[in-house]
Length: 124
Image (cartoon, one colour):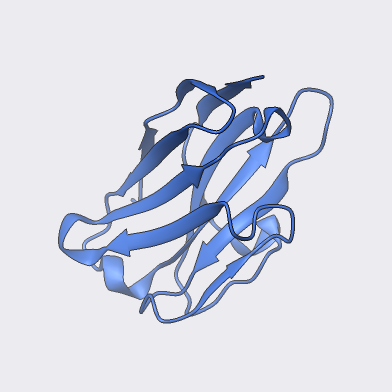
């Protein structure tokens, strides 16, 4: 059973920084690609960033390019989302997801494992 646990959310001022973490309890973490998604109140869940199982391929939603950075530490079974200069429109529940494949892409249906999410609120 693969479980994902996010942490690091909270209240941050616009222009500040925040780092989200996601610990993936998989025996073979390097076989799993990961992604971050977010859902704001009244909106559908949307893709934010993805990283391949090897870490060599990274891709982002256009709305966050240059501000958010995804990375992974295979020794710690952890995926990170560094949020630099966040904006109020980045306010959402951020969820980590994993898929046992190389590059699952941007569609949430391609990810089979999900965490509970961590709330990020960006104040102006």
